[in-house]
Image (cartoon, rainbow, N blue to C red; front, side):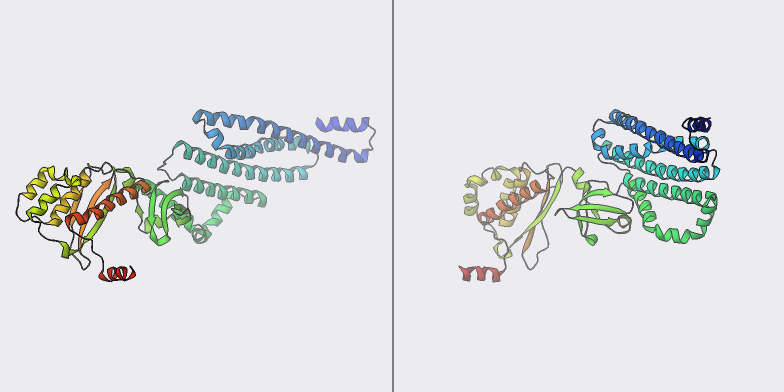
Length: 404
């Protein structure tokens, strides 16, 4: 019908009969281009707002956060309907040229496979990005899964494109891939290992995005920012990025600080080395003098301290240990519900270690270091009150004396 109308149009403008074929072919091409362009514009104009409304119903923030992904998906989907319309119009527009119609049909199918694959990949990316914003601390390795799905999409549509170009069935190509299994396993070794590792990491809840991990072998010490199919990215405390193979998290050892972050406190474990030569018994006049100090008044009112003073062999190191424990018990930044202990360790050539073992209620790194420093500043300053001294090598003292 269309070709007959175009023939009548050619006769009405008195076009020579030998040019009728070229005229009809040119008009058909113009009609095809116009229809394809119109479909593309309409689909793209309506599709993007529809996607935005769907994401708005899930979470209002997703409309802004996924702007680039939505634009990409809408653009790829907008190419599909015009191609399908063109595929349906080919028998009508080019019925007089079967060879041209067949060639154009193959090209249209290649075009469809290409943009359908891109659309599927864009949809996977959009879903992964939306999931990342909907679930702030995901336990599912969505990055690895999305990358694997995109890899499978690439393989499937590559087979379809090659089979369409060669005019062969996709099953023939798939049967041929069986002989290349060893090569494929070698090429995709990292992807396969990464996918298996991602599943094990997710099932065992070993690492999540946002965890602080420490892996000296790879120079990683910081927060996990991304768990992908083949790599895990760690932002170190100096803002450098360390990339670790995903399978290394199950083949090598690493430290995850998540337990500390989720617990009630952050551990303080540090010792003061006391000079053994300063350890001695305290005489009664000295005890009375200590009790008169304003700083130690509340300390000597404790019942356990009174029980200690009731004996005749009180040492200054024992009194100091009681004082340290009393200080920690009354420190506002120490978690009193967790282990709190002051103990002596094995004496060494650098003195007698008196170790503090407790937990800071504030787990923030900066605050934790400030709390720890404040405690030990005061303990070092109070040592002379108990007639004790921290161990310091004689060579350091001599050099300091000579320098002064």
